Amino acid sequence: MISARFINPHTDFGFKYLFGREETKGFLISLLNEILKGERQIKELEFMDKERVPRSYDDRTILYDVLCRSDSGEEFIVEMQRKDEGNFKDRCIYYESSLIATQGEQGRDWNFRLIPVYIIVLMEFNVSRNEKLLRRDVGLMDMKTNELFSDKFRMIFIDLNAMDKLEEECDTNFERWIYILKNMDRLKEIPYKEVSDMWADFEVVADVGSMSRAERRDYESSLNSYRVLLSAFEKTAEEGWEKGLTEGRAQGLTEGRAQGLTEGRAQGLVEGRAEGRAEGRAEGRVEGRAEGRAEGMTEGKRVELVRMVLNMKALGLDEDAISKVSGLSVAEINEIKP
Image 1 (cartoon, rainbow, N blue to C red):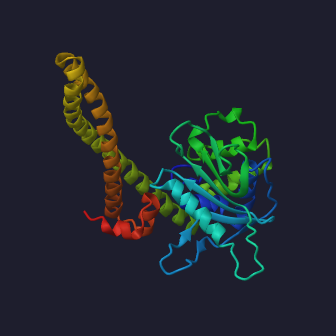
Image 2 (cartoon, one colour; image 1 turned 120 degrees about the vertical axis):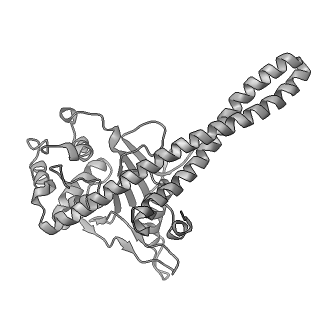
């Protein structure tokens, strides 16, 4: 059931409907130009085949949310990502590297000259797990001087949750785009129409009521799949966290006692048995609990991933959908049994 007025851009169908069609190409050009302001400006885009043919029989077929090429030759992968999947960073590197590899041509005339490739991910999580930033730019840099080594490999991650400005505080179209994409499922109307006619046009296209019956049916299906995947992910994450914490505490206490006794005896020989046992046990418990929690959380993440796959299998999701959420290959998914 659709309750919001506007299309949810976090769904697969919704994002492609808003930014991946010829009719809506202007919105994607505007979004990319705001992201790349001061670096590149795009006048025209050509949508490319999102399914790349594998180079050998055992290669994975690669599917992108939106894949396009600018009028000056740069290629762009644009994705919307709701949750942090397993090996997310590695997947981004693999996607971009695969796209670069397809530029190779046979014959002596090709001199390895490459065109720039960008992957731009709009997400609802912090890709680094450290400092919370709205935008992170990743490229090939000299690690000592921070000098740009090459502009051919670029990754831009935008954390929608880090947009903390209110509607009236957004001064640039970049901030306006991020604010709208973050809050679209709660908006009653698209703001900023007094700033540019583009926002009025976007309001018309993004309105669920403007869809055809077939488009609305496809959108509802995508929205339901999105809700199921989100529910399965959140349930599995909660179960994995609780299990990992419980196992971490138990293992930490066991190792803490053993290590505390060992260190206590050794230190007691030097400083006195009574004082040594006390300090050894105290230090051992602290260090043991820390190590136990770390190992427990690692085991918990593995258990979490297995439970997530089992939950999604139980919900009837196909292997490709499970692979996209979990980051596992189809072969690895098939090895996981109830």
